[in-house]
Length: 300
Image 1 (cartoon, rainbow, N blue to C red):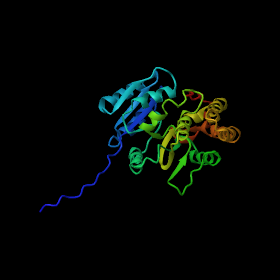
Image 2 (image 1 turned 120 degrees about the vertical axis):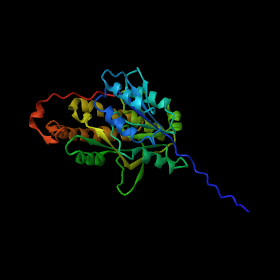
Image 3 (image 1 turned 30 degrees about the vertical axis):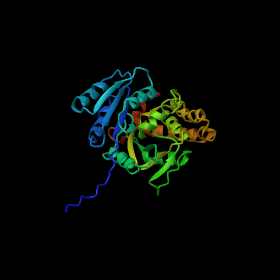
């Protein structure tokens, strides 16, 4: 007598969409996409959102799209990161939607780590996930990052724990469930003078959701913002307390405005002096580089 073998219902792996907003990123988008297409076993689609680029960056994207049908483009004419982000996330088909920057350098197991994390969460305990970003091409990057974590009012990242719960998200390296995005879509702010990733994370937690921080999910991020002069940097960092104030998180508003932003401004001044004499192409110090013109990073 033939006895049927027992069957086990195995839930399918969730599909992952990756959204990459782009505005004049010809210097970085090629490397970004190269790292993503190497992980198409775990990435269902890569959505590049053209936010009125005028350089050759989108030509590079089209070349990738010609070779990889998983790469597709969306155009968003309204200028600003929040508009480009929304345009990409609105058309994403994956169960999970990751959002990174065009200068983000993901690791070789980045996509697999994300999918595995949510596979291990069948009950849906976590609504969103983010990891760390480490600056590349700057001197003493690790030392500055350690000090930033120490003084950050949300820096509750115990080294002995793999996953921690945090109230916000980190835009260069974050993932949300698609149903969660649909739930908060009308709640996220469209202002360009706040941190859109912090706003999104707060919208999730205020709706009863939970954001996870995974220490091993680390990406490389560009140091372009670090080249900004002090006035531009302070203007940019003022977005953080403004975001908390928008959500009536007044303790965080005070903590970031009175402690974190001033302390980070001092760190930035010290870091800026080092960056201005550091040649990232050669990895050497060059005092002559101090005279080279620097441009402030465009605001989101």
